[in-house]
Image (cartoon, rainbow, N blue to C red; front, side, top):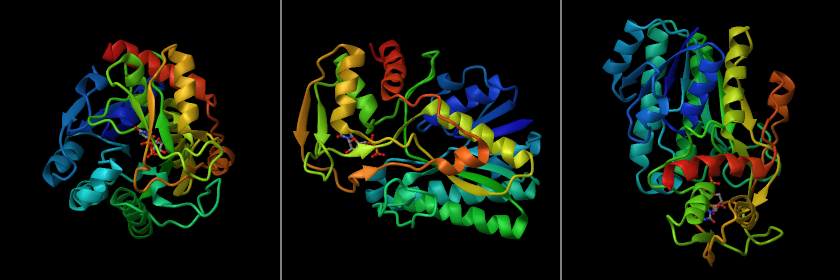
Length: 324
Ligand code: UDP
């Protein structure tokens, strides 16, 4: 089976590409390399193209025999989406529309889509299940939700089959230590904490200590990137076996506070990791924890990395190799 992986040179995409290849799938990566890294897909068939370029997409589909698409190509920095919503709608929504039209024109009917817990906004219930109301509080989440709606209507009209995966906090790195999380600018907690451990950053800022949580800092549900990768492949297998289009949450179901993450990173790295308490970052909900019961029951997915120490250790292995 030939899989086109849009955004396959990015953090999550490159881990999924690895797992697809391990399972014997043929992979073609398409990436504009704005956030992706060519080194993350060394040796994998690759096309440098942008999904906002309809003609480039058309050429990819006409030159290759593609059976299914996995789609990670999106901008994903919440703060940037607040100041540049047009950029996010153009890339995430318009780009995906181009992709769906190219799929339709070329009779490719299976898509695994990379969505986000940001579609829920401020949660009304914890843990969050898929039926929870959606009310994004930033353009990033709004663009992902707009795509999910588009998928639903393309399903009705053209029979496009999809699985949309709403990730909670993706973290960790492949055991090989070859690929990992490298955003520029980096905004995520675990890589910033590990860069502080390495001395690349002087300190980690704790954004807010007055949340209604046990230690006053935000709780998040961290899920290992290879557990995400497993879910993508299971989603593809489900569609290939005639499974219905659907949406799944993906998380571990446990919340860890910012302070707990820093403390665990101190234990894993053996470094003091200087932390300073600062004001809240705007738009951060106090608690985001997933219910992943639906994907467990329907696809038999189980996280292999339930332990936060294991997740941080895997990220640390990669950081030591790449930022020392
Ligand atoms: N966070 C923090 N300091 C940082 C980066 C993040 O305290 O330098 C907090 C952030 O406020 C949130 C949690 O860590 O409560 C996870 O943030 P991240 O950006 O990793 O993921 P998000 O949950 O925003 O998708």
